[in-house]
Length: 419
Image 1 (cartoon, rainbow, N blue to C red):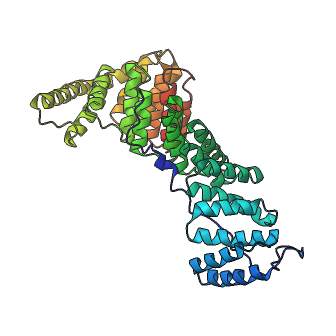
Image 2: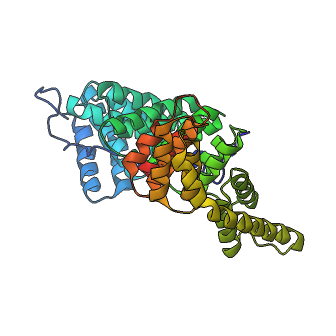
């Protein structure tokens, strides 16, 4: 089972992203809503309380205004326009009183009344979507947000509300798909997608148990908002997809690079794999650093003894390895094929000699005849990235063949160059 650790993958992700309910201030009681003479308040029994309601609204006396509006509403003989105008005032006052469920019902009537000016219809549709979201009627919120998008595609706030509503209705596939459209639109426009958008996609895939979706979503999060936690989750997923020791070492190397190598067991395994791969200098560095920073410290004498013996073995092998580098360089120079150069470049990389590593790896790849050219390209990319040559590093990582065992790791290293 995929472990996604320490992420807020709860419905709270989909909340708190709206700034509030937008409303339209009601027009003056005696003003005409259009050029039609019928669109005026002419019934005295309606006009008088509505005038008082308008004055109360101006003074923000919401209870007084509501009382006057209800007097007007109780008048039996009133025109359809007067009923509409009463609803305009009523909806506005109810929102000021935060009586959102009642306001939503009233504003639905205004939209279907035939009197709401076309210039206000779009904004009223958005207001209804927001009102229903506030009242947790997510089906109605989804309905009105979709209607708004049908009239005016490309609205980020309504697109976000559609995705949020799907999420809170537990329709996670549609939540992910809807939010992904917003993210793709932002990318095409050269904008950075909001982190909350990316989190909702990630959370939706997690709740739907879509393992491929989780991995893809985490890549997007890491691309735009790289931090240790996101990297840790992403690499935890991919590392578990392979049983090749050298590729696993590659994942540990990336974990170490982004600050996600924190688990004692992972650190010990990386060191052992590094020694098995013939680069004990890397094992020495990772073990020594983590003993010094307290990660590989234990009150258990047996456990601490294992850590100390691991460091001692790595130091001994690394000393012999360093002493052999000059001889290895001479042999590589004479060799007609490039495997010795690649091994030399690998060693140089782990000792932080990036110029020498780049030169040796490029020479070995050019000669050919190496055991794993894709591994060599990954090592070259790492050396170039460490040297600060991001463009060259991306090119090296992207040279890895699609579908090879190094393909996914190289893709993650490309992400690292973009962070």
